Length: 221
Image 1 (cartoon, rainbow, N blue to C red):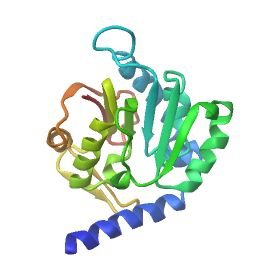
Image 2 (cartoon, rainbow, N blue to C red):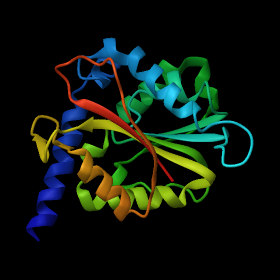
Image 3 (cartoon, rainbow, N blue to C red):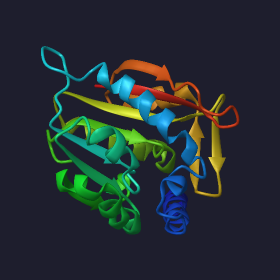
Image 4 (tube, rainbow, N blue to C red):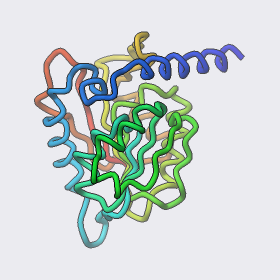
């Protein structure tokens, strides 16, 4: 029962934290709005390896932005590459702001889901790409495994899940401020394997400021 109680606190503290964050790019990036361009460029290069026509290539019909916030990644990365995008985030104010931030592009957003990822169930075989960035630290190990497993079911044939996130040098580092954890890469990989997924490509995001965590991107099928 203790575990149950702790996870409730873990999730509610995070929800309360994000409720106080400004619905801006700088707010989404914890004051590091200036890295947004480098981040998007790195993501685009990584993702474009898989997109295109032909055998084994990932389609460009529909993408899901997990922990989408105000839609920074949807606007800059996903909508330019996909016909439609869905957003899921735990904070309703961010999703409301996303409609404004996306402007005219919001016409190609089909769904805004206001849920924590631990409760979110992707529709079967709906998505070509499920993009999960800077949010896995808000899930417990077991919930992350279960969420990734559900994401598998949400993929179209040749679909792809991408995790892009901070990586600790060793072990698991808790962040009491936003109620999250940062895991070492070996642990992230073991959770991915537990979810029944295979890592098809992995890269470190380069050119970020030295003082922040290393960021890695993993493509999974």
